[in-house]
Image 1 (spheres, rainbow, N blue to C red):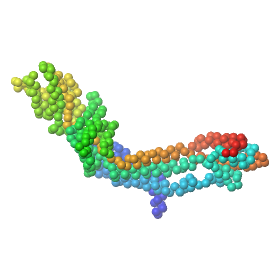
Image 2 (image 1 turned 120 degrees about the horizontal axis):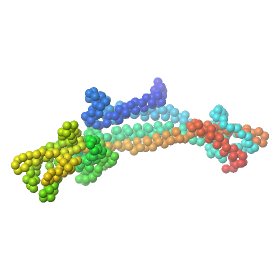
Image 3 (image 1 turned 180 degrees about the vertical axis):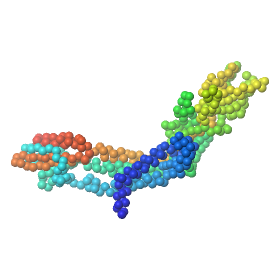
Image 4 (image 1 turned 30 degrees about the vertical axis):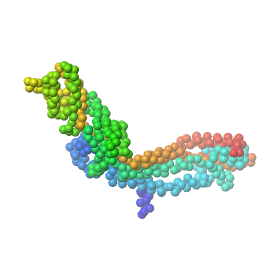
Length: 461
């Protein structure tokens, strides 16, 4: 019974089943962004499942697909794959080891089906043996002396075992990273410090340092709410020492063993948001710079105006009727609404757009809306993976195993020598376990080399 289970667990059929399961669940895990907020994942699912999206998300979350690679059942599947590779290798290794270390076979039953060519030479059997030895470095002779055998590329049979070893090492590296490492997110509002990484729903990891987000910068495609690029200017603070860095989508940063990747972003309706703008007086030529929040006021003495920051829109645009409307929660086209009040108490409201400098042109002044600070937050992925070097080692060994398995061949040669008077008849046999299309051509080339060695009388090594 145990033997049957051992054979079944190490069978190719079981391996194919495991690979099919891994491919399926991994494809689902690729579609569902890992560790993403529930709202984001539900919105993405809504495109495919409509109103059923919340139910689908609840199922995926409970079954672990929102944090697939840290679930017990997925790691159990990987463990089964590793055991399958180990059992398969253990079962087949003894026979392969005998082939790798055994003597070169000169038994006629091992080569009788691989005849290539026969030729007669005016030479002795001893000269044929010496010529054979000069052409093939690893060779053997039968006890009767009538069969000469040689081979090359025995190690090619080890390719599958090397590949299996690499896969087991790779899976081991994954387990090491899963147990001793983490992959989580840290969300930081502009101007704030954070030191807690959220890894999964219930797991929080305290970093031995703090991360301060000085500024989040984003660029958008023209007339589109879609970002073309975004990056975070951050400071790592540890033991009162500050290290500056910039994290962008394709440029991660590593600090104190933790690698940070730019993951996501957003806008938080924060009452502490600061708006930066300048006022250029066309009367006095004086430029004044301001940094203030909504509801605050300032005076422009040259024009006898009192100005109030009345409202803010992150993405101001026009609807089909030409009316102003905010079309996104992201800072696609930020706009500030100013209320101007003169000495007579008359008020007027104007929107000034950050991306449209002309919107700040007035008769006696120009207002430039330059920045929104404290409204955006950046989501950085924080990752520690102590198993990564082991994974790299596994990939290297797998690559080596694939090269050995597919690009090396075990080639065997036999020559049957039959003396006849003052000459000998040499029958040549050749076998190649891979690349049989080219085997005939290689056999003919080898036989020509052997024939030339015999005819030239070469043999003294």
